[in-house]
Length: 208
Image 1: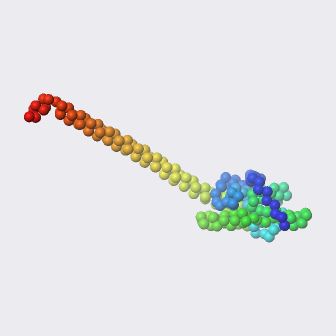
Image 2: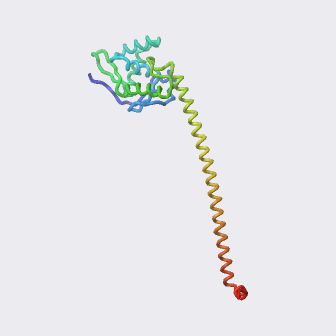
Image 3: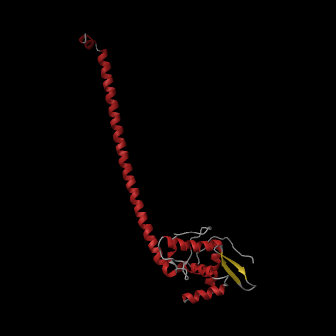
């Protein structure tokens, strides 16, 4: 069956349902799409398709409604499915003339699996659950953002310390240069005085 991938730029359908999209941490697919670039609903869809065998749109819809207890309109579902196709995370093919099937691409599978390993490696709650991680995502993102904030503050403090050290080094360098100039001036004055004494006849007569 011929799969369809448009390669279009990512869109932001259903963005308002997930406030955690501001976090762009974690791994990304080869196409540049990261886990938190997706909305919560898109992550739910991706994980469901990952766990199913070439499901139809209606099968995906039924599974999400059963697991999340919410009604999913056809417009919302297929708009987000098309987004995931555009991202290169899922492919769409024809089961028959009236029904399409969906399956994750290599990029989509890699994104789901690498994200799970990534969160496991940092000790955060795994967001790649059967529900796409909606319930745990807020906790995970908050934890990661606190870590990023702490690291950012530490980096800022280190930079300030470096700047202060550079100022001190610069001041010492200027002081050392001033001392060197004074030494050169004293040497010049001493040499000039010696020259004058050699040329003074009175000094020469006194020296006899």
